[in-house]
Length: 399
Image (cartoon, rainbow, N blue to C red; front, side, top):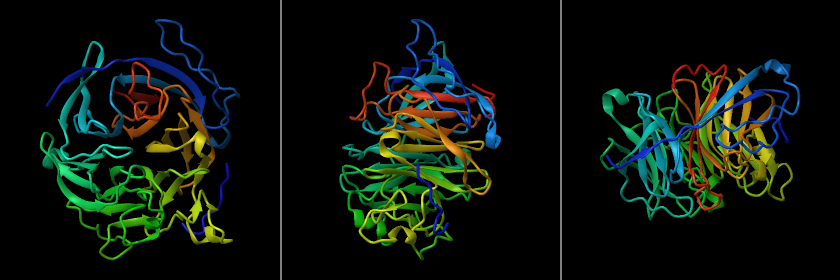
């Protein structure tokens, strides 16, 4: 791994299934081998760390319990929590919004289809993508979705059971590189990630919505304080961002797909340029020496075959990135000033296949989804799945 200092900073009901596993690991100083086959009828067993636990850099041993909350989903893309403790989950290809929990039955959490979103054109990486619940949901009952139509990607607002009203349209779309993550920041504004829609130069064009992180009001207007006048653009120079998360000090982090060599975790600053297509992973992709010095460098980077991370979430001081091609969860311990302490650690490597969404639940647990039915995975009979991880010091006190 290479690190470089930045130049600047209503419907049918499904039955949920439950399966638990425990794994002991340290946030620093250990790695994981492959899980051994599980004895029939017993919960899966994770291996012990291949190196002794270490407290170097402040890391402590943690126990993690993994629970499969739901099975048989169809490319679950995003997770957003409601005030009642239940979660809304989008299915990319079916354009369905699901509700999972908080009700349960003898088999686990109840899963039902709330509605299907009209006008979604699901092809390639496009479809029904991000979802975010209004911070004032108990008063306004509003949900926001990011979805692909035949002409563009767009953001809409809706009341559950009703079709969305578009609030931002004209985001370039393609078969791939559509971005799609939605999340409300600690400032109360809505953030959205977009891809370059395979038109690489659009990422550097401040007038284009492609290859950007956007910041808008709930009405879809550019948020006050954005770095470019009358523009929703918050940062630029992105290839395909699909994960957003804020730490307790309000630093914003984003996962980004590289091309052939490097995938990235970036700390996002307003108005900063993250280099694509001139730079990939903090290394110049052009023939111009020193081109990378014009752009903000990644916080962390990996080779694409061990990463290709989509969703991101923060639990306490841990930043978790759910990875598709890498088929693992990368965990990074954050510092108070927005850096990373020690080396990232991998969890669940090759255990559940391709991992897509990651969301911090209100009880302190982490929910992730698999993406094995997206055309690039090897689905099992149980796929796709929604999985809950509880960390020993994560504060998860409810189930």
